[in-house]
Length: 403
Image (cartoon, rainbow, N blue to C red; front, side, top):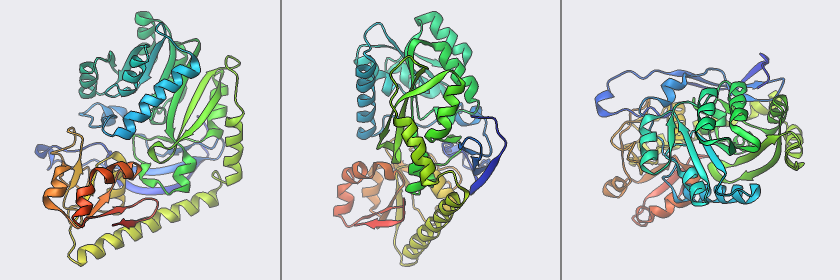
């Protein structure tokens, strides 16, 4: 964000394969390519960031398996997102909403139901096909100046551009935000949502660190970054989703009445010490403790003859499995709702991914809940597993058994 090279490494999760590279059976013998997963703090601006950037062509172009619509909680979140944005910005049928990294089009579908014109942009061809089938016009490409100009030529300038859980995935943020400005109307607003770095530290959410997530965002570096581009944060709000996220509204300087919340949050971050090396070292120590406690718990259960599976296969879960060294010797299988992952094998550990129904069919003693951010909904869906005596293990912020 600021171009500084004063980077301090505070967390090393080893070498892991990309978290969304689920292998088909015919690929199971192919070697995984592992990349370093280390997090650095910029001592000048305060941006937490990965030390190594994996090519986006590797991460997103090849059979991308993530769908943004697999939980009721998520679907309700995007519906609320669209309704609140339309109300706050007073948008109507003439306004255009563009979503960058639009996936299968859940958010744009919500904007469409609010009466807006919509346009998606996503680089994953298999995902774009699903979005098109859902009635969402989607360009299959990475977002850049060329795609921005193409959208303006076709549909005009956008009143709102969104990038939910995407802005933190971008390497060249200067080029990205210049392209956003090219796309926006004069009063247009850029809105992004991302996990909040404060919550990552506070709740030990180290599994949200993986190669797609290049930046771990806090408010202090964002303020300076947007000012550099003639923009300002005029509204910011915290949300519960994904372990604690924030939703940031950005416009041209002076174009919208600005709330003092962003400055207040930035000062609170400094007061909490999240940019200090000693605080970051404490977080790294907590991560190592979590690994030790979780692996001890699971190995002890296996030693007692217990059978263990994992429930849900989000990208965050792959960081946890690979960092903690959990493989098919510990976990019999991983269950999933998403058809894009069922029948495949987890990256690195090569644990088979099966449908949720297999949990009841095999009834293991314990289920490690990898999508802990949707724990209430998932545990509610699997009440029969608990009725039969099954117990859940929630790994974050510390390993605990829910019986």
